[in-house]
Each structure stands twice: as C-alpha cells, then as structure tokens.
Image (tube, rainbow, N blue to C red; front, side, top):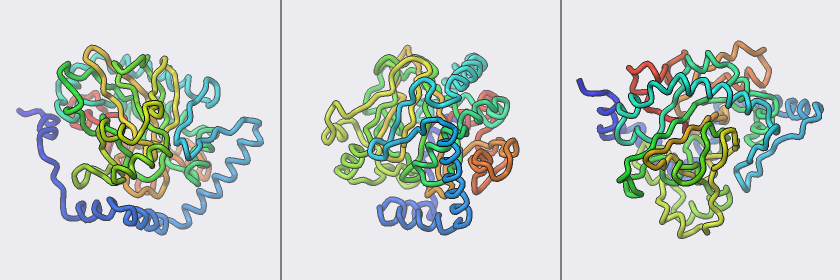
Length: 352
C-alpha cells in the first residue's frame, strides 16, 4: 500500500476556482489591503475589546517594574537576552523532554516523507501540547503578550506551538533543489505577525541550516525590486517570494543578512510576514531543532492550520484567555493530531 505522505508529496497541487479567485485578489497590494479591511470589519467589537485589553496590559506591565520588550517595525526582529522574557528556560527544559520522546520516531518520519515534506517535522501535536501546558503558559506571559500587542495593535492570538526538526538533506542537494521555506519569502498569513524561535540544538554555521533573514526595511526594498508578490502557484500563499539567493543578493549587501546561530536556548522574536527569510538548508550528517510559537492578529488575512489550546485554563476576559481564543475554534487534533503515531500524513508538517 502506497504511503499517503509520499502520495501527497508527489501529487500536483489541485486548486479550485474559489481559491484561484481569492489568491488573485490576495496577490495584489490593493487586493491584500481590501482583504485586511474586510477582516477587520467582520469583528469590530472584538477588535475594540482586544485594543482596550492591550492598553490595560501595557499599564500593568509598566506598573510591575518590568522593562517592556519592544520590536522596532523597521527591523522586524528582536533578540531576547537571557532573563529578558520569562519562560524561555521553561521552553528549553520541556522541549528537551519532548525531543527525547520523539527520537525513536525520527528515522521513520524521515523515511515516510520524501520530496517537499522532508524539510522539517513537528514533534508536537495538540495532544502533546496539552500534556505540556508550560509551553503554552510561556507563550502567553504578560510580558510577551504586551510586546506582541504593542507590535500588532491589539491582544493577538497564539496560533502555533511546535518543535521543528530539520534533518540533513541529501549530499547531492543544491540550490536548484531547494523549495518552499528553504528559499527567501514572506509568510502569507498577514503583513505582520510575531514568531518566537528558541534554539533547541546548537547551530554553529551553514551546516545546520540556520534561519537567515533580512531586516524589515531591507526586505521591503528587496521585495519591491523583485515584484513584491507571490511567485509560487495559486494557493501557495507566500505574501512575496519564494526568491532565489541570487535574486535577493542582487539587491542586498552581504552585511544585511542575519543568521540565527548560537547555543541551545538562544531566542529571537521575528516578524516572518515582514522579513524575507529562509531556513532548513541542513547539510547531510547534521540536524537543527528549534521551538517555534506563532502569534498573530485575531483578524488574519489568510488563516493557516492552528493548534487547539485550552483557553478555559484562564479567566475569561484576561489577555491569556483572549490569546487562546481564535475566531474559528476547532476541536483538539483537527489540524494537528499526534505526529508520532505514525498513521497521519500530518506528521510531515514542520514548525514554520
């Protein structure tokens, strides 16, 4: 019996008329802005509630004596220094245990996922996240939600928590065979979002396929020079790109590129919708493991699969409860069942 993951990887992407129409609107700058306005208009009271909650949270964090963490929109990123945000050490400790649980399954996951699915794998799913509530708690601290609320304009929604495992690519792989997130691109959910990346393995150099990006201002300049629109097939939903290294480097100097290298525990906040980025170009014989948490606006332009989180653990009306309450809630395991069970094609989805 043919493996469903392999079958899915080899099947051409089938896109319906409705998706093609939406993608054609989404692909233009004017159309994208129209979709943004439409999403905001659909939830006016909720947006107002979240804006007010963000102001209250800002005052609470300031009153606590903590130094607020902020992301400069011109940069689109912020390195997190040790002790600057609570929860980073907890993430590393909890994920280390989860990685040990996943290790016996790694080879099976790699063998079962050829082609475009072999770039990265998620070691978590809704069930495993529910067993590690400390990961969610670390993503909805007052300090982190205040930072992201300031950047996005309202209390956001935590959409994803993942442990991304990127295996070494075949020795013969080269730039012509890179695809998807291995090429420079903007994520497509919106024009802003924030992802927290925490290294769970040492990333020394290019052998480990480090996350590589351009700051937001440089990314805007480069993307405009390259057309500033999705280059993939209808339904691929990258806000811009993917672009080859050669194309990007024609408009950016070498010193503008930033790599997330360092020791286990290094942390980064990155707006992957506003910074051209790539990663997972791991050389044969090496690997990269990284924690990723994605925090996005309530009124997204383009929603992608998201985790189920237990909002009931927090008091209604609190920023934490809001952050775990998406506009279209689904049951546990709807998008992300246990990736280690071995009977889901979903186990091929990675962390980004």
